[in-house]
Image (cartoon, rainbow, N blue to C red; front, side, top):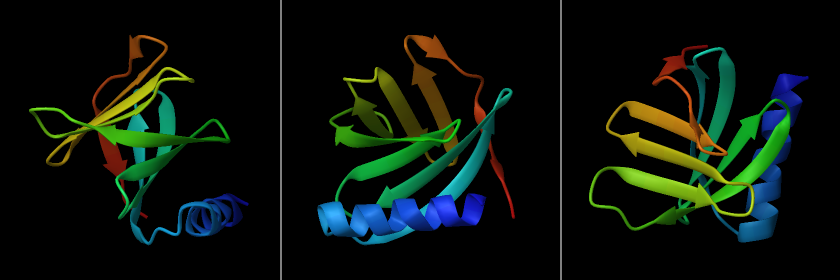
Length: 99
């Protein structure tokens, strides 16, 4: 079922934004599993607890930062480090899960 969900996200991004997908990665952030789908149009889709949210890249001096202000979700990537904040609550540093 999870593979169908990721496929749907990739298809939805391609149809909605006309964007190619650079990579899809899964992380564990504390007790939360997070799927991130990075596209080549400066957006990512984050899947949290079965819900998908589109985040747009914003200007920052360190790493890359993505925001969805409506849902109050932020993802910061700095090299291999990934940090997720939802509604002002920062999860522990995320560790990539290899499949």
